[in-house]
Length: 150
Image (cartoon, rainbow, N blue to C red; front, side, top):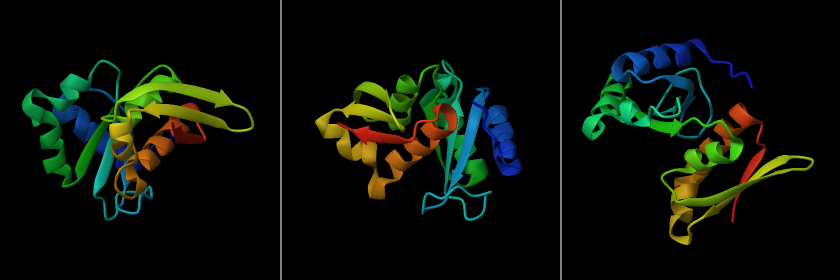
């Protein structure tokens, strides 16, 4: 699936890669209302990091990701890329413990994520912000129309 990046997202990816040495596959810029923007009133930036490069992206003691946050003056979140939709959905819902993801392809493509009872709130996030970001990323990368927690 082809992901289209805004000029702002491309600039953020270049900065991220310079600071961390890790490869970013995608960048989503969100406002508090979880609406994708072109960098206006930014407070949350999510990078999809190439599989296997998450430790490099975070850096020792979180130093690399902290440097990116400082340079962008925004909260930065990282999601590890994956080759399959089920693994990607689980990664997008992290740090919640996702036990299993089933992808159902009927009229819509729906990911059913089995999340540990204690982590349901983490998966959803305040005001639904975590699950909405996971849905947005999963749709962009794997044409997943919805994510349901079980």
